[in-house]
Length: 204
Image 1 (cartoon, one colour):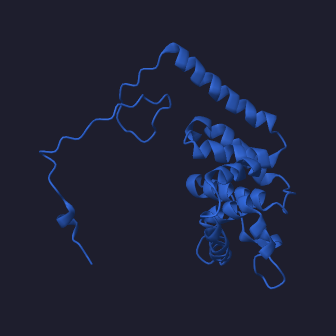
Image 2: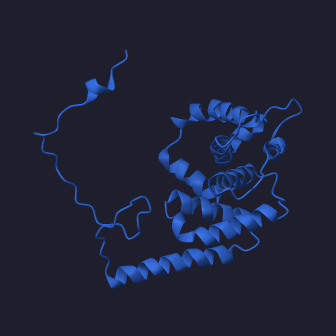
Image 3: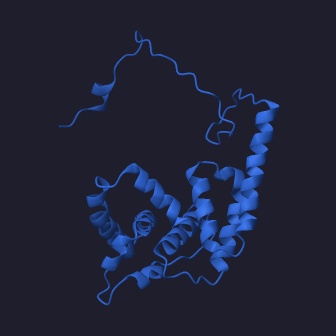
């Protein structure tokens, strides 16, 4: 039943809501357009800088290891701190894009590479041209995704996510979403949260 938006509006003039008291974040908030007081003591600032330096060093430790770099970038983005490592991420993706990619048999790696490069290309207009034919290795002679892929949960999850960056005229993303949903949804209630955590760790 349709309910007009105006009917959902209630007055809050006489309602007293409890106020939460959260500790201020040591990461600046890039979405706020106005300054706010976020005083951080010297020890915390040093810890903050130390953590940033560790992450930057990780990019060098993973030199010539594309999959490890892709996982590192993915983790940084999921933590919401990618704005602190923009140059490192851009340099790493630029290198990965131009490298001869020889990990075409690893679904997690191929899907994650597709996701990050296309995402970066769309957001920053980097000009990364990543085609859906990178998934051809995972299809059978009938052009369908191989049923054997359902045993690779981390790969299926990465394929599902990457497929959401499909563009008009591409059929593979729709096929990938239908395939992964059909095989992942039945096992969601059968797998414990700890197992999903292990999948994330193992995929790296």
